[in-house]
Length: 112
Image: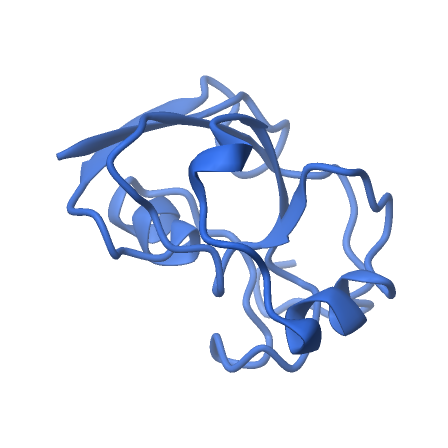
């Protein structure tokens, strides 16, 4: 099992969260398994950027992003070198530390 540490996020997980998942699980699915309700407006089909995250530790252990993911990431709010779409980034064998950005480009959310 791989451990994923989600850093505290003011709205989604004020205390942070630690989740253990099997390799091959997407970061988005891992977040949801840990009770972190990260947005995914396109239902995890790599068609938006609402599940954008920063992989603060372990980024290099993830498979490389696809050209499609890179094109979408260019539209994400607050893009950084360690940005990934959590619906596309699959967990490997190494533990990860993930930060959820404060904002997304999604103007409407069912949870607000």
